[in-house]
Amino acid sequence: MGGCSIDANGTTIGNETLAAAKDAGDVLLGSIGGPEWGTGALRPEQGLLKLRKRMGTYGDLRPYFFAFDSLVDASPFVIVRELTCGIYFEGVPDLKVERQLIDNAAMIMVKNYTGLNGVVVTSNLFGDIISDEPSIIPGRIGLLPSASLSGVPDVKDKCNGIYEPIYGG
Image (cartoon, rainbow, N blue to C red; front, side, top):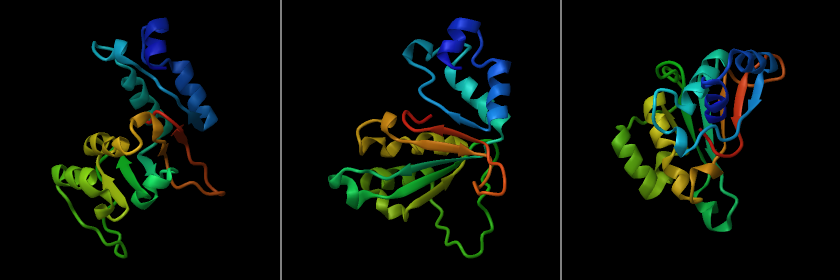
């Protein structure tokens, strides 16, 4: 998948890989690219988009829980990002929602993200950008985990997931 697949097979992800991932139900994913694949018609992230679609993952959770003592006061919060459709978090009557323009939310996040009340729910386009903002706290994005899920995990129902323990996508 990604850059390795582009080099070996001329495609961002093969059909066999997609089928195996779907059959497994869960994927543990590491880095899929690098600067050598940053331009051109085939880019590593295109494979990730195909994988998300095949797995039926529609939401991405990126928690920001920092283990360092100096960062404890700045923790925790989470960004919930839709992956395959529009905002899906509408109409929850018991949930207090405060709307922000994305440029203002980015400014708040960089200045003092505890002002965002712990959870940010956003569309894919803006979530892709704003979920990288807190990477300045530990020093780089590669230290932030994420999980792309097809539903809410529980013991009764199957929930497909793509998990990136490091080097979040």
